[in-house]
Image 1: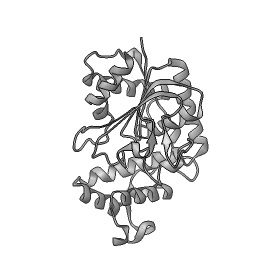
Image 2: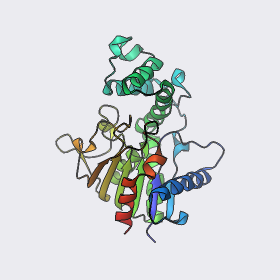
Image 3: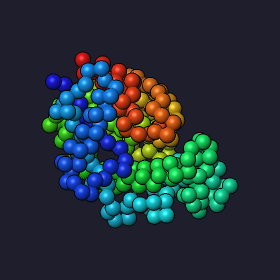
Image 4: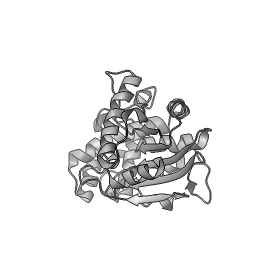
Length: 275
């Protein structure tokens, strides 16, 4: 049977389980969500999860903050730059370096018509994991090695990558000799200027990225209101994207993996490439 490999996004650290057990638990959750959108459900045995959250835990200067008051400086700076991408003028507060992250979160929430706590949680969970991967060469190498091992072991037809997982998948499919028939990225921050895009491990052509040579096809799916999947469309930054779909997954669930997995666009892509 064709195999589906999945790789999670941020905020998935499970301190009570060893990595294989954490992968199994999260993989079961993803399989259930994916099957909500599929006409023909996939078997749990055919879906595999790449778990790497344990590798993002604090080491040295770059560490994960538990809340907005304890964010690593590099993560806090990334969060402020992200707010500017959403149209927030930090000069209205104290400038990029000094503006408190709570003010930043609340300013984004006001502009987007969202609950303050929702945006605060997003910032606190997303940016520490992001910089832990992007700015630590040792961590980055270890995370990619997990994905390489999983691809070699399962020979997947489809690789579904959510959020930060899409960054890991993109890097890995460029830098390592592994292949999948289809890369499906959901809620991806790959195109995020300054914060993500310049740090990707890929060749540039006229300032743009491209579908990794390790993926025969690339489907990108984004909720227009996803605060992480910016700017849209992703095709303005990347060439050779097979399909770029915009679809709503819920006003207050704009970045949730479960919402993307159960979505009709994801089901369409999975069905198409599984055959």
